[in-house]
Length: 77
Image (tube, rainbow, N blue to C red; front, side):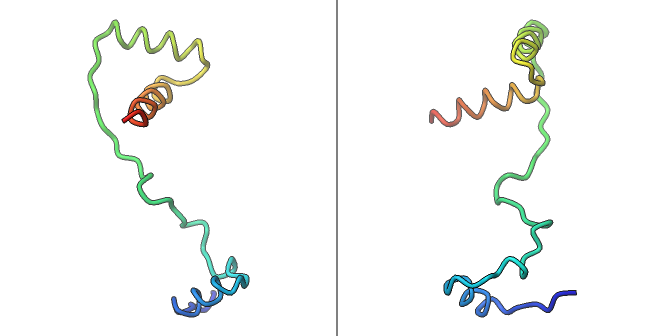
């Protein structure tokens, strides 16, 4: 087990350009704000069929296509 380093020591090493990777547990690293949250959305059947056709054409899943479309739209705002 690794000995824990104080934040001030870690900051000093980082700022000095010293090696710090051995002090990190990258297996637990997460990018803030990217945690998944499940939501339920009801779509009319015609819309699901259209989404599925486009997803098949692109070779992606329905969920991936919906997320891509929503991300593109949100990036516009």
